[in-house]
Image 1 (tube, protein in one colour):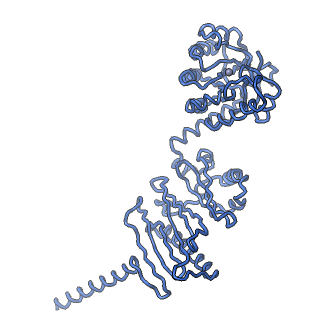
Image 2 (cartoon, helix red, strand yellow; image 1 turned 180 degrees about the horizontal axis):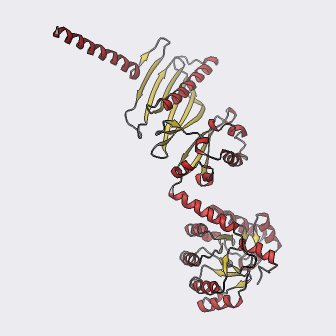
Length: 465
Ligand code: ZN
């Protein structure tokens, strides 16, 4: 009796083994199905990250070979929609091929290929970017992308309305970004759930699958997260805002606050201006002094020097100071032809913007030498021509005591004072000057902040010497 029972159990075990082998073969080996399909599928054992695996599948029919490399998480709520989407793509392509009566003679005429990029956003949040390519007779006919953002903890997808609290503002923002791009149709933003997008390396990336007329290419639009952070859902802000961009956001906010700062019409304000920089050491020393006295200033930079010292130019911008344009090479604009004049005024502005991210709104001509053409070029590019009301003569005296005296003896509310951050003596005189003026009740603002007040109080002139 005992022996018989043992035999039954043994047979059962063998049966299970055979069944398993069959299941295993149909999953991982090549099997020819009734409609002449050969399918081979396997899940790669290596976890890419926390339960995320890649499933590969190769398939062969009379007209099509398919190679799929798509995510497999063993979470139905995520796997099923992705795998259904993938097989739908195959179905649609097969139907198209059949409709077109494609044939390849001895060779299988078409190929379909899926590749997946996985980008980690957080411990539990991953982006899958699946790229599909369709080939017919060895030529790529179409490529497009499909993205999924998944939340492993909640076993769900994250949609744009999940990620962004203010979708109206997001759409307005994105509409503005794509409005000049003739390749992108405007209805692309109609359904936010249909968008292909991800967040990767502090960037929001929108993928747009272009139409046939545009060679079916994939366009990607990259937007710095800093620009979008205010529309994010609070929960995700914490996850997405890295230390690096938090710092950038703070600098932008501070700048905005300064711009919007309402000055007291009866207050005593002065605009300190520093020309000809940035300079490798003196500008840094000046930035430190300004910070100590909670002073904001305006730096009229030569874009040639911005090119030499981009980090220092960026530091000036980050510290919340105003950046003005002082030409590329400090050439006397009254001594050059119209073309050169234009280059010095317009291209310098561009160069400064490229490095610092700040578009200068002010232009100060070298030596204060200007004429109507200079003013025209400046105004056409949204730059006000700004000179000064007090020249500290630091360039001439190069003497700390003398810079101090010249400044203090002439100062009055509304003064725009000319300094140069390329001179060590100017950097050394600055703490003495700020000390004395702070005692007298002065506050230090940027030129753009000061000018509306000057207009309002009829104080002037704010330029000329
Ligand atoms: Zn100058």
